[in-house]
Image (cartoon, rainbow, N blue to C red):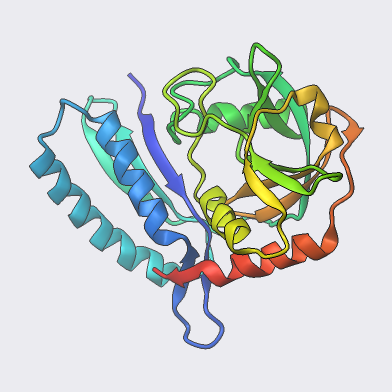
Length: 257
């Protein structure tokens, strides 16, 4: 039996230019999502009281390591070791190169997806898939609906009506489900408070029609990136004033680790 990654939760950190403190966007949400996923993954194996204490001790130690790490891309991890034991870890990783745009290539939703609503088990598979397609893999349901990117949640803006929406299925325990994105949650709050946003919600979109929208891909590492094409077909041009406004608002969500 090989070591198996059961749960993971990664986030970008930076050093505040004035205070010198290490910060992350939506840190409390990342911690909460990791706890929920760990509880699901180990259900029936560890009594709740023991699990709570185990996680508390882990976060205290991890917080110190992350705070000392400065700019980076740390990751909370739950592993099942080769011996079958459960092990919590915090990987302190350097900050990868950041980008502002990406392209999407459609793949079947069943490709390499195990418990797709939980972040962790699919990470290595998704990385291989992205390398194979030479872009961000876009998972598509049997009905042709766009689900999510391999590392991103997708936000589509209708260029005619100004309506913006995320794709449904976050957290659903089914093959077509997807990750509950922390950055998506932050962007939803921004949209609700943004006076210039006409309307906002979620709705299904066929992958083959996604190019008819202005599409954003959001995640904890890059924040908001503009999707330039879907399966080689250019998407609608980004409304730069709105994009800048949302990026500025997202930049206000950094909080000390």
